[in-house]
Length: 340
Image (cartoon, rainbow, N blue to C red; front, side):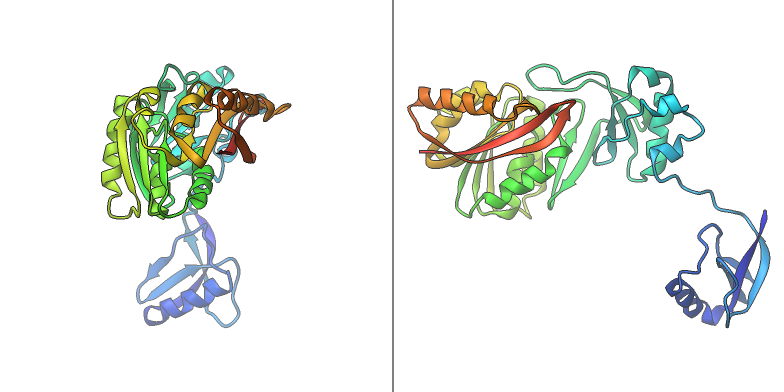
């Protein structure tokens, strides 16, 4: 218990007094409001002229940490702080963080600290390695909170249900999804290759009256894709047609489209022939790749030119940009190009 300063106000004037103190930024958040008979006591930072102030005993509220560094100040040494990865992915109520081997013994402390700081997070997983297999699934280890891998993620007016342990999903492409949606015009036909649980088609169809063919190979991701189309059916302006299968096989059955999305930065070049097959003359392909920061675009441009030569098509580069940092000295890039 400590002594604190309070403004004493009759109950009938309590709201009025509270608003005046708030306007003057005099309320002291370290303490709670108290009741004293027919009076309300508001904690203040200092005596306030024109108001009756009293000193009274009060319990000081615990200060909520604002960062991992604050939350772990008493748990990690200076050298351990140097290894701590402060950034992490938030997917709905789930956080996914990298914990270096040097902090293996502190991983659960780190997980609990994330939940303490972010009230919307109920589960924390640690990445146990890189993405694996044809479905690009990352192995995860529960280090804090509820033992669930399912969540609902919200972005640009749509909701997506997914399982982080069985499907590929990156919240770090949120801005890129918004950018692509802004380029689409009403009436377009879109081939959304490697659609996953549907983030690109859903964000686009939320904003545009288009038809999007969403192609996904992972059967579990495809189930979530179908579920998410239904989940957002009332807010979608466009139409999404989920298709389960391999892009190479499905491409032969699709109509030629105005726009082709290829959000597969590792190995996407193996499917450029299919993208050219699906793209109509004058259409646009969005091609993603990982690239060294020392030479961001020449590798991807070379692959596009090779595929164009095989398809006997000409291309015109419309835009090239860095989408996000991916690893030390490696970035994810996109090249938007028109197929003539």
